[in-house]
Length: 569
Image 1 (tube, rainbow, N blue to C red):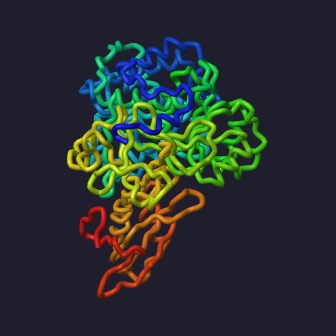
Image 2 (image 1 turned 120 degrees about the vertical axis):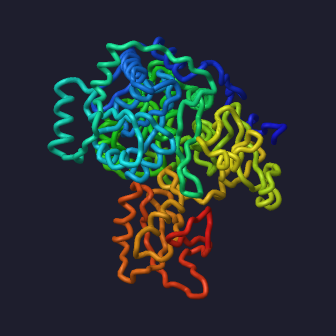
Image 3 (image 1 turned 180 degrees about the vertical axis):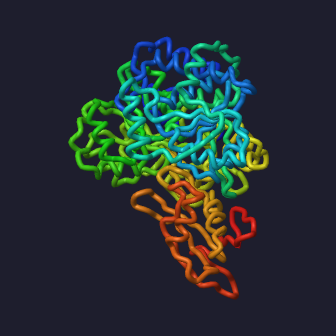
């Protein structure tokens, strides 16, 4: 396969084998092109208000100027964003990039422990945070040095009087903003006003400068920052955009964006859609499915991205099947496997297939996708243009494609990818980088095979990881938290099948305290783990004097006070 890219013969007609990863020098260079070309077009809609590309240009420029005027904020400084999907997100995101600084995306549901690690590891000098989560930051700041805190409220970019009304309801009526106090914090509106009155100096940004520190876990349970360069991101949005945009028309696409912008899948998709001057309808709370169905009813949307959990949830929400799908032409599913019954029912209800794609944070993220319009086939599709794919055994020797004859096991190994979208490495973690990068190849940790037509199928996972609704959960992190409970003697964490989320977290515990309950374990985890990492199943086992064996597999047990690697007994 290294000498022959067999998948090219299965490419859709007109699909190029290579993309130009160097068409733009940086993401801000691309943004300048987009802002000029589509200035008067609507760019983002949220909570009933639309920002044009011209407004996005102006506001992101103002935020960039504000950052450049802060003491100590020089090129390459890390700036964290901790917010759900709001109009503020693209403004702040693009402002950071235009200032020549590095974006650190943070899950807004992180606990103080999780947030503290990410801020410490990234060395973030500043953070933009929705007020709803400022109390979490306040707790983390006792252990972290962050020089600049910019806070925002949900309605900050809405017009008056809607802004006042939304912010009042969120804070005073729904009481969704816990009390917080952070000395020196500046409101986003004040920051934008200062920036508007200040001077913006376009940063000198090169292709190899780091655009994002995108955090992902590892088998040790310690989150690592994947260094995604300007060129990595530009290459992947060109790859993915070329693949899905064969029917796109400039300034005509309406894209439903329910996935969080802090997630790499949505992040790259957003830029790819913007290249066409699309209008992106960003959903703040996709968990509220009835409200999302109402929002979908307001648009003749043409494109949508999502994960299996969301697709399944929408299909089971009253009113979804009555929506107007006549304009819908592209639906992309990623993050986790799209299940066959969901894919088939989605096609029946909407008349549009779900195009399953595959990627990972370390590849910005796109690696493979099925051709548009192809019904569910159980594969993750074909490698994107300018992407090489190889199946390797444990000794890193390449395995041949499976032709349908002989034992498939002889053709099954670790999926490895190489291309311009592959990260530079992990931030300040050369040893971890060496584990996954070899001769330019990214070892994905996923196991599978490639057939004679070039289609890739995942059959297993080499990495000790649980995939919950498209989010990675690493057992050792959960084990460390569970093991810190004084009532736990030993514990082990595994993934189990779940009809709703694909996989769920299960913890098996040997009790030190015989009165320890499932509820007490989950309540303890809730203080240190974000929701999707919480155990959904808790099982108690008796201690075996001859061999402690608390897990169903018998190969993982975490004892309090002892450091564990990927597996420990």
